[in-house]
Image 1 (cartoon, rainbow over the protein chains, first blue to last red):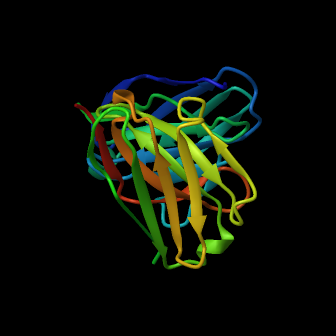
Image 2: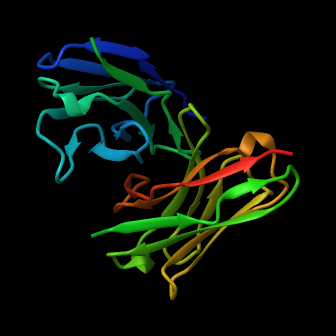
Length: 107
Length: 119
């Protein structure tokens, strides 16, 4: 199975700061990585697909990059509504796997 | 508006069975592959099962293979998850999720159905 390691586990930031969240795959997966946001007591929401492809309705401050084993979700100037948990997921091979998440919290 | 509404969750004893349903609306259900994803209390996301649009392809996580069965009724716009031989470690919120286009990318999620396995 492909293991996805997200770091850091928790990131404390001040609104207005820009941040980068990391997701590392245990083997090369091309660009088959997707990012989801999960707010407290809500369902996950797709933010970015295939490493860098934008999703309709998602604010442009969210962007993704990377290929192979190292991937990054960037948030340009974090807003209050962005404080939540972020998961990466690989679709390179079954079983589908998720990272353990990065919690973005207010400093 | 795309909507996925799960139901059928509840409290069940270890070893017993439960069947979850997910009713889809706002899109042509029969054109999309579907997944079940679960989330144990306070934990991350775990993929459970996949079914293709016409039910030709079905895959399971090893943790549920042989105990869970995914199925769908395209005439009723409904996805199912039959769970048998339930264990305490199956306790979770179970989400149905739509695959948005080629590849296993989940672009729409339901609100989840809670399953608690306990004596």
